[in-house]
Image 1 (cartoon, rainbow, N blue to C red):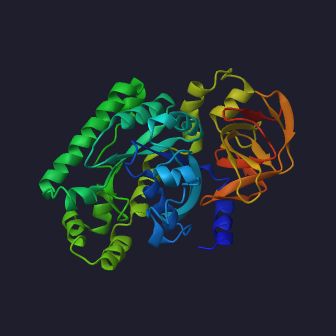
Image 2 (cartoon, one colour; image 1 turned 45 degrees about the horizontal axis):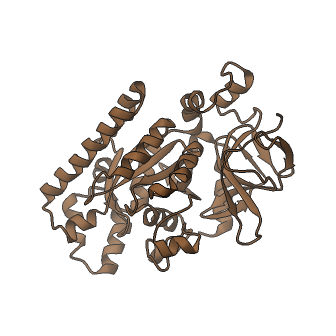
Image 3 (tube, rainbow, N blue to C red; image 1 turned 30 degrees about the vertical axis):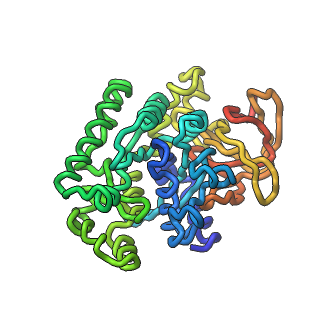
Length: 381
């Protein structure tokens, strides 16, 4: 899809909070987050589908040489895409986070910007220590999880499990995941947020081979697990074609995101009391709680990056209330100084694109404001 067309679609959605989802990926190292994100980008036309998940030509969100050398994500990376679901376009703002324990600070900052997370668990390795760590981080921030059991291709090709053994393995991971939510989440959220195989808040598949399944999707498409097993007897090109047509990863996963993860306004209603220590009964508190686009601007910087094209700093983060626009003067509350926004940007895939003005509920980026991760940007002190 051409860049201009994608930006035009984003422009139509960006003020409609009901059609926005702000999410991240969470997982133990090497459980497939970046290959997973590649497939979502490829589906939205932001990269060549042939290279999705390819260590040499893919891994689009690896922006630094050390990430290529280490074969792992070091910095959180922002991407955005448009997904059509039930005849409506949805803007999906996604942050691909690191899985290695050494970069947990990047995960924590990313959690501040989003409302839901896709937790990836390797079907072979199962729940690992860092899986538990990132799920706990999400739940502490009141970020709602859904579950994707990845690398099912390994169960089929390497472990050679029977279909019955694979289903038992999925149930084992599912139960362990829900036990972690039960133990970690606040009691009133734990009951609501435990994932459910039958309602589609659990999916399984292979990011590497670009397929996924969930119970609702299998019913919708009339596809069975036996059909999936059969694709591994096909030639590679035929397998890719079948997956894209019958069980594309992006369709299953993003449908799950839209159905089970909250809108910005829904999330801020219960997240703001947790992450903001001000007076919730004040006008400003109410604007934050309701994600009011007409309220006073409140933008939290979660990540600073250098634009490779201009060499300038870009401040990425979440706009919780109000709006930001090109040329607007703002106040940095930690630095205690005023600066002027040069441009307001939205992500087109991994590339930031000028948008002119963006309202509350979005993950976005601004130039001209030089702060630090954790800085809060408002119009007045």
